[in-house]
Length: 184
Length: 219
Image (cartoon, rainbow over all chains, first blue to last red; front, top):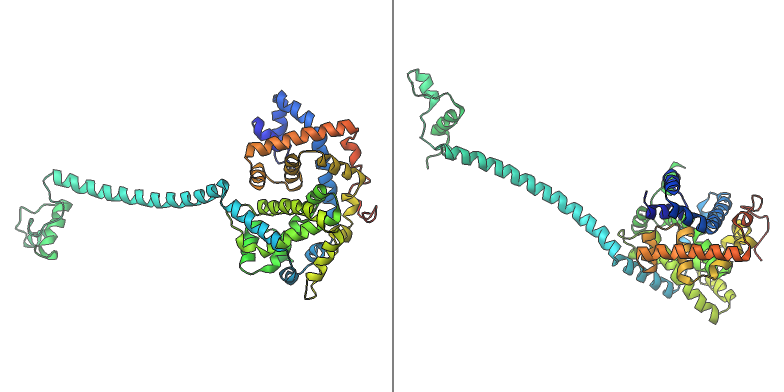
């Protein structure tokens, strides 16, 4: 925990990292001094909050008992145009704020990362296929099987007279083109 | 019962989305969630519980009416507290031109079709017993002696429990400025308590805190 985080915790009505704060205060005389200086005011707010919360906890759990209004009443109650304008202008300002832009940017970035990942993966796959074909071409082989370049091994095997039949997979594939690919 | 509990656990953004989709009954969840802290802040700012209740009611009405303008990119509570601060400032100006009784009775009259606007919450719930104690008035008085930006930053931090980034958005300042305001405000309050001889342990003794109805209605 750094000093900035310690200040955040000291002034947090719901202290969430008590242990970490205590460790920081033990090791940081500056923050310890700040805590001592601010303690009277902090204690006042904390106790005020506890007192109000205890009182509020004793209230009826019925939501209507708190607000006293049904949803229909909210719809029907009159509100000043100025108050509504204040709400609308606050919403417009907050929506245009840098923080909101950062939220939208994070959302767009997340989407862009997904699309980029798909693009990269697709590119890698295309590249790997291309590199296989390229290495085949370097060894004097055609990229794609060509009709008629290799005699049909099946027939030669069937005739049992062929000594030229090759047993490697590529030769088998190429030989199949004799029957299975249309003539160029 | 289970549905009610699940509803109460929905976050603000989810509730607003459903509200915008037409589930108007969910607005009550937001009211229950924020009414007390809004009331505490408004009371400390305006110094009068009835005015505070008016402003809080108006804040909720404005949020309900303008619910279509809410966007999930910003925090609901930042929006809510921004509206409260604006309406509190407006209430100050209104107090100069209209008596307070007119405003509250106007709310009752204009509700129209028989829907009742309730008595102020502090009368309903005995909250005045806590919020209206002499000692709490000392906190309110101390806050009133601070520069308004510092006092508002403290209200947003301690009553509203807003993060510093949210305080900055609500008050149109930077995050560091929000932190400086809170720090300087706390230092100033501590000096005021020292001057006045007020001590935190004296402000809320165990017997007095949370005493609903103990002191009756706030005068």
